[in-house]
Image 1: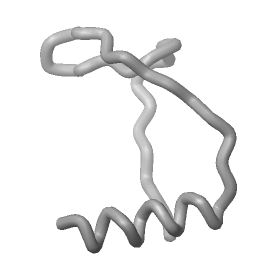
Image 2: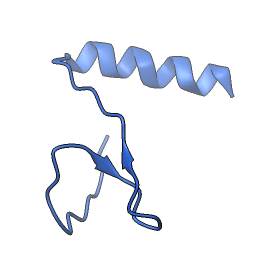
Image 3: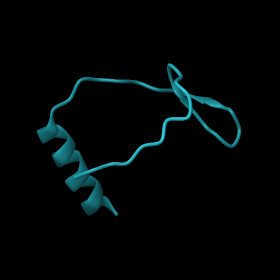
Length: 46
């Protein structure tokens, strides 16, 4: 799987581009297996 990103500026959190609002953000270390499981879970959820 590939994801294309455009980084226009670096911030220590997420920022809503349209409003400039700073959004609550958390980070954690993960594995490729955990990401795959999460993506499969999201597909079944919708």
